[in-house]
Image (cartoon, rainbow over all chains, first blue to last red; front, side):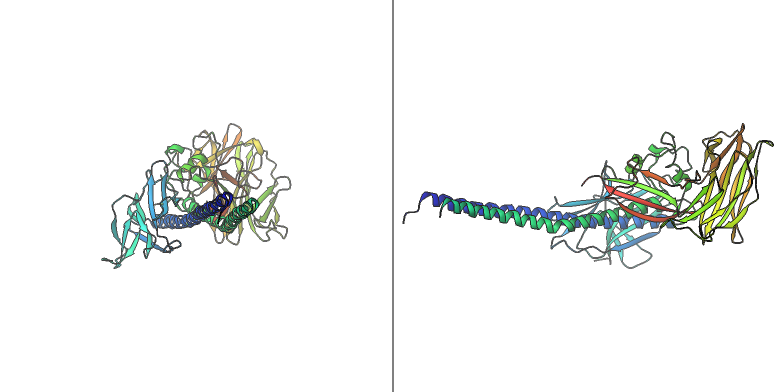
Length: 181
Length: 341
């Protein structure tokens, strides 16, 4: 059976178009999905930074050396099945900010400023890249395991602040856990 | 199949892509829009918390004349006390430094505040500060008019305590009338007529409406009176060459307010509870007020904005809180908007 050349070209062109349209749709859907995820990450970053500012204000207000305050913040365990990280960053020129990012796609990232300049002020933020440690809160069995980065899926993520001396307040994010996990 | 049928099929496929893309975009757009507003709300709350509950760094930057805009390390307006702190009590010196002339060396420009709050070029902000209830003085009829902020309705039975200080040209001294205590009528008005015809006069007012207290030091003489400021325990904007200087204080006694004055020695510190200092320089009456935005008889408000002349933009989010400055009740409203989208 003879098939005219024009039908061969036409069919191939149609198949090509369907594939191109399918790819375009995937790219577009992926872009929109990333935008939605970015919006959710922005909300998470804003929520963490608001709580951090509030806990720092509370500790400074109490003005009592050795006073450690913390607050467990409620965050989603994942974003549409995707894991995410929350980081505390202090960058020259940009200041301190909370950054939330997807673990699988680190181009999907959102940040929220902390309205304090940690380089110059008496507030020291334990940021990403600094040594993690533990803090005891009023003799509780559980400890704050602080570090500059936490996974969104972790239980009992906290913001904390501690009045180290009359002139120095430390603050950061971490996990509220029993020793040994 | 004809060539037209292939073309028609291709057009249908492309149209399906366009339609589905538009639908996805249309569905997600409002969600993103709502979310952006929510973020702006949280950001506004966070910034207002920093401004109202933190004293800044150095903590005494309001009254410390050595701290200029460039040496300020953190911005906050809370009143700082080493032993006691009260929430939402602002330092009048810090607020005053936002209300000075832009050329004044103590003025803190909004660009520096943007920098200190880490807002950079991402956000713009404006702050509005105004008394919790509106108190205006009609200089011609000598009437005080008290109205509600929310709806502009007159406030009935607000207690008004007033005392007039004036420069007596004959004795060349500052004199005062006795205190007048009255209440506003159903029209929100009350007369405060002292029967004094002096050219240079200052009216000190305390309005109390069920615990909401507003203090005002009103210049009733226009340009006949020189204006200065009290910053910390010092006078600012005028020399110490004062004759007959006095400090005006408002004290609460037995549920009422007493407007009183004591002598002021220029070399010594001004009392912390002093709301104004009056003095004579040559033949001029000079008055310095600690109240940061109580300068005229008209309705007072401080607008401090990152865009000069704009207190708010249509797409800005606003948060409002009640604060106390020098014992007077004020409302502070923060407008926050994004500079980029």
